[in-house]
Each structure stands twice: as structure tokens, then as C-alpha cells.
Length: 172
Image 1 (spheres, rainbow, N blue to C red):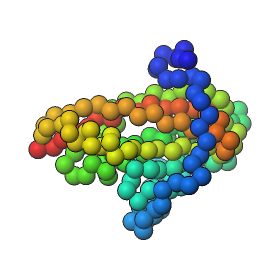
Image 2 (cartoon, one colour):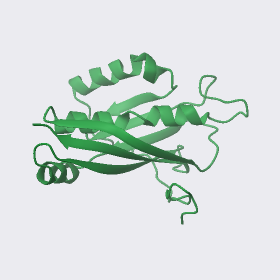
Image 3 (cartoon, rainbow, N blue to C red):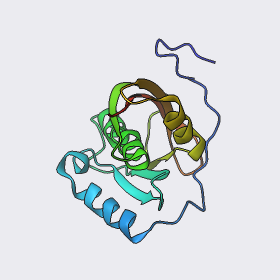
């Protein structure tokens, strides 16, 4: 069901957090710590919990605390979106490598239910997706790719859903 001007599903299915996410490598563990120290990301209140060894999986946590709570006693929408914003772009840039330019083009977020606890988002890009991008794009060509991600609580209840559109161009 969608009654939203953004076209995002306002009644998404429950989406529990993966209890057995992909393992981190030493390199992605160091990237996670560095990312969490970056002032622009740190200010959102969100934290990267895990980066899979191949950058195809990332889990983000938005704790419910004084940094993320708004005046109404629920999680601030800016913290929710800020914690999600750079992740798909960073993942795709890392997976595709130096021969591609990847930028955020647009985003839409739907706030479905107020958050009053820690929320999580899981980002995944499968190998078939990147293979398609590599096959479709000749040097100098570009495409737009859409990705959806939901913020859920510990029981899997969806509190917000975001649709990111990324611009991808093969360089050279």
C-alpha cells in the first residue's frame, strides 16, 4: 500500500535484524571505527555496527538518547536520515572501485512510526547488482540506481523507510 507522494510503501512488512551478519575483516573493522569518528557522521547520533568484509553489508544503529531525541520525546528525523545518508553511496563506491563515479542523486524518507528505542538499518548490495552495473555501462555512460532501506526496532517493526537514488558513471 502506498498513499505517499514519494511512492514509498507506508505499510512495509516487519523486517527483523539479521542475527548472523557477514563477518568483518580487519580492514572493514578499521573503516567502521574511522567512519564512526568522522565528525559529520558522529553528529547524527548514528553508529556503524558492522561492515561486511566485502562491503556488501552494513548495519547502522541509531540509539535513543539525549543526542537523538527531539522535543516530543521521540527519535529526531534528522538523526534517522543522517545515519542512513552516506551508506549506500560509500558501499557502492567501495565495491565498484576506482573505475566508477558514484554520487547521491536524491532521497526520500517516510516516517511511519515514532521511534522510542534503538533503531537499526541493514544495507545490502548483492553481487548480481554490481555485475549488472558493470555489464550495462560502457566508458562514459551513466545510470541511476534506487535502493530502499528501513529503520527497524529490535522486534523488526519498521519506523522509517528511505529510498536513495544513486548516480553511477563508468569513468574513462
